[in-house]
Length: 432
Ligand SMILES: [Zn+2]
Image 1 (cartoon, rainbow, N blue to C red):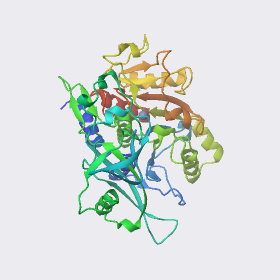
Image 2 (image 1 turned 90 degrees about the vertical axis):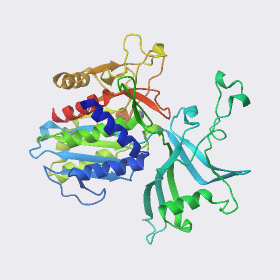
Image 3 (image 1 turned 180 degrees about the horizontal axis):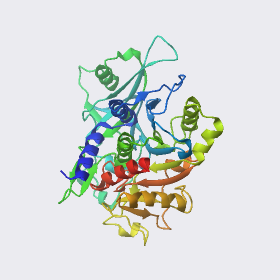
Image 4 (image 1 turned 90 degrees about the horizontal axis):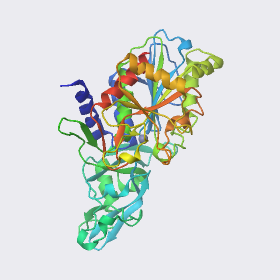
C-alpha cells in the first residue's frame, strides 16, 4: 500500500478512538507507554536523565511528553510541537433528563464553535469523565469511559413541516439542539433514565456519582473517499490529525542531542484559558522543573527557551471548491498540495519570516510539500494556541497544519496525502 494511505488509515483508526479530550489523552498515553515512555506525576520529585523518555498526564485532558537525547546539548535549546485535544461538541448538563410526552431527551450545552446544523440527523455517542465518591475528600474517584455505541440523535424537521427550510434556518442552541435518546416506558425510572444508563455502563452506583464531564460526539465512521482515494471524510479532523502526527513525530525521531517535546492541550476551542489549556503557565513550569531536575541552572533554562522553537499544529482552511472566492486572491490552499504554513500580520499566528524560513528549509531538505496561508483581507482570520503559549515560552514559533474543508462541521474533509506530509514534517523538525 502507498505510504500516504498507510498514514491515512492509521488516522481513521485513531479518529474512532479519540472521541473527546479524555479518551484522546488516554489513547495517547497507551501509545507512548508502548513506545518506552515513562510516567512522571505532576507533583512528584522528579529524577530524570538524558536518554530518558517521559510523559505527564495533565488533569486527564492534556498531555506532555518529552524525549531527551542521550547527549543533549543545551545549546540546541528545546523543540516543542503543540496541538489540541478538544473539538466542538455537545456537553451533557447536570440533571440532564428531559421528558416530553413519550420522548426521553438529554439536556446539553454547546462546547466550542460548532456548525450547529451539521449535528442534526447523525448517530451520536458520548464519552468523558465521571467523578464519584471516595474515602478521601480531596481525591474523588474518577473513571474515563466511552459508550462507543450510538445513543443519541438530533432530528431535523421534515421539509413538509417547514417549506422554507432550504432558505436557511436559525437553530436555537437551547431548544433545537437537544438530543433524543429514548422512548419512556413504564419499567424505567422516568426521572433518571440517563444517569441509570451511565451508572450501569461504568458500574458505579447512581448514589455514588458526584459529577461528570461527558461530551456527545459524532459516531459516524471515518472513511477514505474519492475516485482515487483522494480524501479523508471524518469527524474530529480538527485536531486529531495534529495529535496523531505529534505522537508519530516524537516516537519516530531519533535525535541524541535534542530536547524534543509534544504538548497536547485541552480547551483550545473555548479559548485555552484554563489550568490545562495553552494560555496557562503550567507548561513553562513543567519545563523549568525538568531542566532543574536535569541539573541545569535557571539561567540555562531561560537560554534553552530563547534558542528553542515552537511548532503549533492545527488545521487550516483549504480552498473550497464551491466557494473559491473565500480564499485569499493570491494564496490558495487546495487539499493534497502539502502542509500549510499560516501567517497574518496581525500576529494571530505569532510568527516571523526567519521562523518561517527555518520550517521551509526543513521541508525543502526532506521533500515535504508545503504552501502558505493568509486570509482574505476582508475575512477575519482564526487564531491558534501558538500565540497564547508564546507568552509563557517566548521562542520562535510557526503555525502549521493540514488544510481541511468544513472546519467545525460534525464531519470534515482533508486530502489523504496531507497526513503523511505533516508526520514527515514533525519527524524532520525533531531530527533537524
Ligand atoms: Zn483546531
